[in-house]
Length: 386
Picture 1: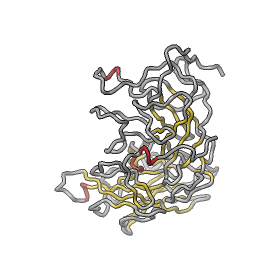
Picture 2: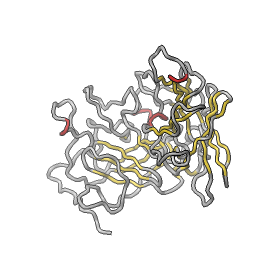
Picture 3: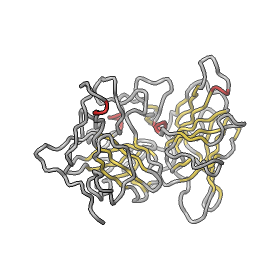
Picture 4: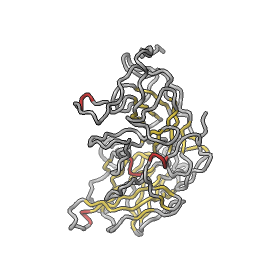
């Protein structure tokens, strides 16, 4: 097993990053109008209550959707240590962005705090750590009333939040706005809520070196030297690459909420993370499976686990998954050079998606790999029978 420090330099692939004290805010330049930190990489939003109901309401970013109407069916799904941005309505007007400037991260910022409350066996009240408080306007610039603004609270979910167990417990998220507490928003406490970071999740956008107008997204995956895997610098057979993600859940040993990851970095607490290589061009993420259907080009049918999966040293809430690309690759098309004109239907943005699956969630890192020489025998893609 590789050491967690043997590869992986997140500051290298993030370009010009802005450091706030010892904490890296994962902000690329040029700085966008609404600064986006690592926490804002959770892109799908879900609604719990009508947006402009009486009292505070929350739209939380995450990778789950409501299962139905009502507070019990429309849980926010969160994992311990997950970075998440909450969009809160009917709060005190926030005139400008405020960022955390120290590590450990504060439990309150600009008068706001967020708490996870668990009722039942092994429950308790656990404060979240705040990375930033930012205004988000829904109206024209001359409208500044409460109905025209959401407040973006970027937080780290407490690592202390309890998951699993045989005894049911109720988990709520409570927002406190300058001494006024919201109602409890129901939370489903999951083991994991995986999201692989992509190059399109900041307005500054990570670039793989070309200046074409059409710059699609790919997974934030690096070579051993910290440079970004891209269409102009693809991964090679047998190479070890580093995938950066959030929401992978508890680690062993545990890390305190809001603190930077120590060295050596802790690995995931449970061996429940699986990977799979999908060599279809432009493939979307799917959950790893042991017996692929006939004709699905995954290699091999059963893939060894990652070399390392855990937190990234020196960072807050950032995980890395170290994966070795197979030594033998199938005959696949190369990623398309975006400087050459052609129909978008023929564009090969990525030719390998590394699927990552946990207990409660999955995602994938879509990247470019260098195809094998034409003279090399093709890998047999027929799945084994188990």
